[in-house]
Image (cartoon, rainbow, N blue to C red):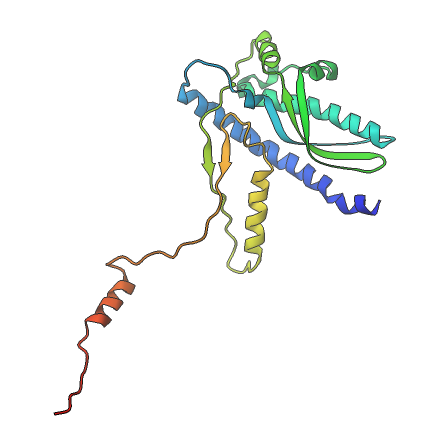
Length: 232
């Protein structure tokens, strides 16, 4: 139980991530639709990757650990499927999205993978990747006459930046790390416009140009006549 208490912050982090990521992911989804639509990609097979919802947080409490895990996964499947529909379907048709029973959603699941998990005697908390059957989901969306897009655009590179106040001190490094971690917790790989986080490299000191004050000072110093003494 002590180990579980120490791990309880994960549940709170998941709740905050779910609230923050939902709004951000929605914005990314809308931008992805616009970018992918403007790209006018040629006809071909739809990208299978978009039918996976990654890093999806789940949690449930029940009378025992087995029931808690079962309930969390079932609720996670339904929630992840809803998330998938909002990724694929045009935002103007959100009000027409179907509400499917858990049994029907379970039939659309192709599989799932546990990213991380914690449990107690009555509670189960985890982060999972849920994969759905592309053909079945595509047919379901088409049966409702919903406009959708399931082709991935080119991968975008993203450089995370964090700016702290002048009195932040060591908080700048911590804030930058947490900001990048927040982005890493999103499902960026399976989005309509996938995003790759750029790896930060070492800082380089800028080289002085010929017109810079530093270069001018150096040149002036080197051009001064040297005083010499000679013994005759």
